Image (cartoon, rainbow, N blue to C red; front, side, top):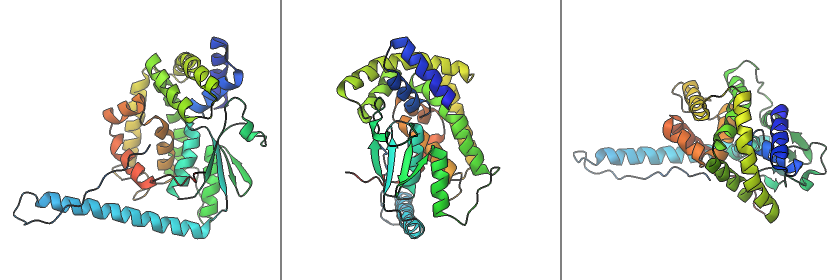
Length: 316
């Protein structure tokens, strides 16, 4: 991750002459670095002989499934509150960073209330207190945690001290696949042409902590620079066709599910949350829409949106 970020930062800075820290932040945000809930309708029960009977039964099934899911989430949240109930959780992040979104997916799924501090990618004044100068950074009652996978592992152990994870199990294998493969497909896709690069930086600058001037520089100079960086990344990771590679990764993930609702079976595990987290920033960009339209991942993604639910972020 560090090598990729360094490559991107140097290319951005040298190609367009923008601030080195801004160049680095663009690389971290996009290389290393909303939800639309499923609508359920309740159908009535007409005469069995009428054609609408099937629709009525389907409505009841959907309504029952949604109610069961909601109840399950409430029970899950109560159980977790008994085991892990911190007084203050703060996430220092870039909104579009896939690794930050991994952490948020975990927090949201487990209904852990947290505050967000959006870090300015140039000054990084929000994290001057820390020796670690990357995001995400999570503080739990003052304890600092860094690196998305390490953060999630630490939180999971606090919540489930009785469970030990194996390095060879299915869940761990796919979490590594997310960090070592899936995430590297994002930049070549969201910056594959000038229009998509501008779309991506419009999202990044709109949701990030930028001043007005920084926003203009980042959107246009950044989009131009990252377009060229994405070409270098394609070469680095031996990607011939970035869209085909993204589609292939989506299909590979669906195959891994083996017709289960989630990799974790009846409920998401840490690998499900990792895939969902890194894909969430691109889901409604052109690349994400194309991915859902051209692969089988959409059904799983919609289930994840519904199961993870609303953000547990504390608005200030």
